[in-house]
Length: 353
Image (tube, rainbow, N blue to C red; front, side, top):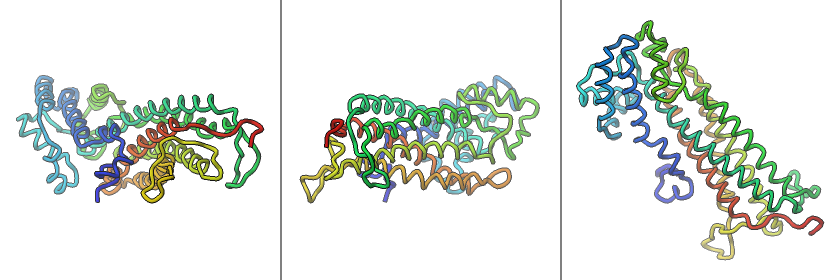
């Protein structure tokens, strides 16, 4: 059975095509090729080859026509795709001004970061849209009355605005978190064989700065091969975002129950057995995705434990988890926007039943 994000029909509920495209095999391959081209183009700064050799190689690398499928067998054999990628690029370009001084982790981590920051940019845009949508919802219904509920029992009357604020206010904090996180993770990975950039010599810093600028990333004083807190922080932020949206979804599910009827939603999901039902599908989906990310984030925290200068086990665990978390977060935001748009009414007039 395929995973829910790319399953033939379950993807209709779970998939986020925009985020999926950012983490696709084609996108990752394009990022790796961009890394290798930049490495060739700036290698003269570390005396790896002449500037002319590097420019020629970079142009050839950028023009190489490679298929992601061509990396499958090599990945099965080597545990990473980069040795196969370098062999193919060498064959296609005929150049020796290629990859010297780099390691597989430099290529793959940089490609991961490029997908991650594009995902964060898209997530931030959606957070802004959801903020505006909730503010509009509060403007429409905020003065209406609701029964406040504590521990799922009737407590004291509140306003709809009181309930919406618990969905809305964390979004501002999440946007701050994304903004603070972005420069910490938008870093080029350059370490070489043992993470110390020894093969780059005295030109290592200038080379790293040029590579970072070329790829739209930040340089670092040292490689982060075995320092994975940035990626774990990204996973934590993703889980916090889906957690807030899951809280909103849970609230709306409870508010929509027959007999409580605090909210009216348009276009609910149909039942095969009970035609009169309209199930709060998007609200339920928010709860599911929040719980999914809450489970995955623990794996990303396990992956912080990279032994010594490089890990194989912890590193590959990240590949399994982070793209799925990004897609879950993206889908959670589109579902939340659809859910808010479906609200027809919340609450009762102040002083009403």
